[in-house]
Image 1 (tube, rainbow, N blue to C red):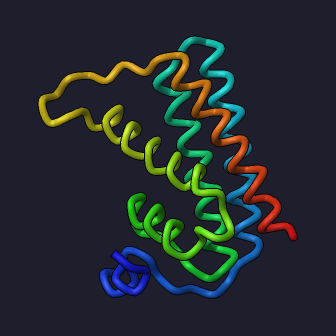
Image 2: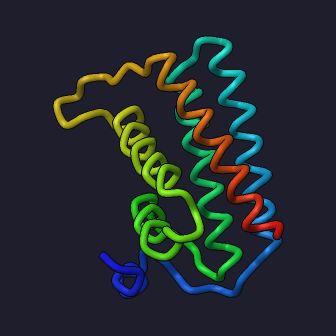
Length: 144
């Protein structure tokens, strides 16, 4: 799927570039990282993981806001980053965003067979580390 496909299907919308929204998304990302860390300390690993993903999601949205786009789907956000920003963002962050997205989906909605997915402490630590790295990288893009 291409960016044009996403726009045609109304999964990504063109909008006016908005630096303020981008900066606010970075603040939300920081806040979600703080929540993830506090949740991890309390051994609430599912909540911590979801907050780490939310931080990455808001970082990705910040990029789109800066360039005049708005997402209408978590998956479309990933596809858009992969296509349009692969030369500006390390692929490890784009891939991590997608990986966390799929795990988050299973945590919130369950698998088709309704098994509950248990999140491990090591997954949370990795997710928080990825969110912090992504935030640092995106902050350079937005605030440059």
